Length: 68
Image (cartoon, rainbow, N blue to C red; front, side, top):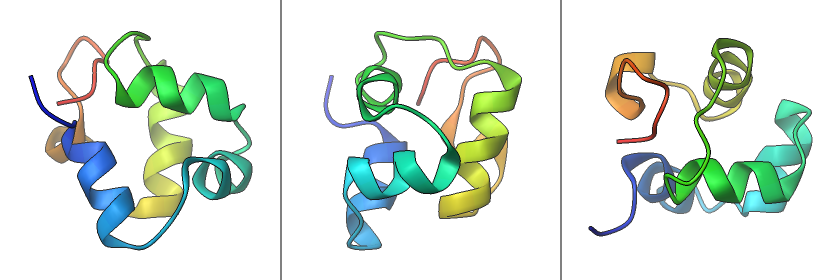
């Protein structure tokens, strides 16, 4: 499985994990786990990430909270 859509969008915007994590109020290791589909993102974390990168939840996350 390749990079998540979340990772691709972040990179398209020229942002680092550290940058997005800080802006979303998350630890960079947590964001990394979410992007690698190792961590299920809670609703609050999904909304915080989307508040930074934009887009709709359905564009980047499965119903389970895993990144697409």
